[in-house]
Image (cartoon, rainbow, N blue to C red; front, side, top):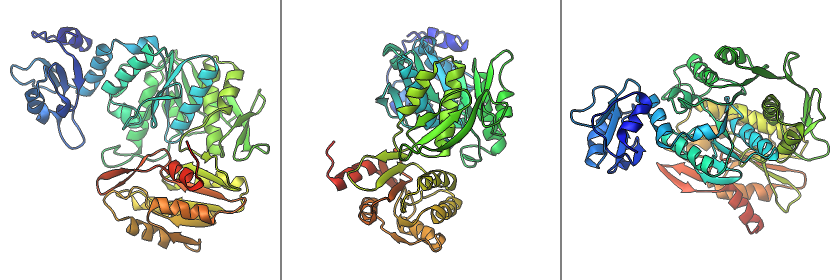
Length: 479
């Protein structure tokens, strides 16, 4: 693509008309024909990497003013939003061929996105999905992603692959960081869904305070043609206030004024570790996941589907077939007890999954967990308190210790567990095997903290690790 055509997307002119063959915001990836976007990061300003990008052959640069003398490109006040528009143009506006659906909230984005994908698939739409677990066309993994919402270059490249692959719909998790960093700038979503908001992602390089966090979430609703939100959450009015005049708005929840109103959510008496959700005006929905938090996500997915005009049969079929890797995921094991993997890594998520498991009245809950290193110690306290409340036995082990020592983290947790019987097995593989050895008929072994992650991070190194593989190895299961 000619540089002049590319820069026209941001209203910029350039006397040079080089051929642009790639976009990058990483100077180490710059090569002949590339346009380098010098973005301001949490630690460094991308302008300092312009010489390196040029040395590697970059053909053009966008950056904050001034543009270096003699360098093709454009100086712009906001390189991040400019890059989003450039990526859109470079990949031929794939969004024009797609119905984009955004899901945002502190908790539940991944599960709700999976539910929506299943519903849309059941309704006959070939559906892409982008989020924490990667990018998918249908149920086939297209690419992993280091971010819940990819950076613009990766995002629009992925949307192009989805459009070319025959997708008509894409469900996308949109994080507050994505909004803050302009990753979805320029996109218009056919629908945006708000789940909930609670204090998180505050401090460091994320958000200055809760107000900024909420404002970033709310900004999404200026980019949608339909807004659906949780009437039971006190932050929904702040989201709805951003909706453009004339945009349809619908709400879900237990509140009487909700357009899609839940009447009850309880363990399904006919199916183990499943939930029955009853909604006004419909027969009960079956969700093959335990807990009220999963029922809340199903309610959100059903409400959005209704607002989009999808038929109830597709909603019912989609919800009934939802399975989310690492989210309340029950592994099929040849044993008289259950094994559940969940990504829970703070007190609130511990409470959610452990209380959900307790509702199904197992003989014992054996929890295997650690805590992430270089994270607030308050998390350790809250996780330990939750385990002490809901579990019957704990096996403490490594999670992602990062720069800390796993034994120090486990020692902290041990001191906080009070009277809960527990032991420490630092090697996570051995800890899982120990829990499986301890389990008996009617028990639940809950593997908490890693979820979908396929690694353990320690000392700056990520080593491959799969909890599912450890369990399958223990039982001699061949995949």
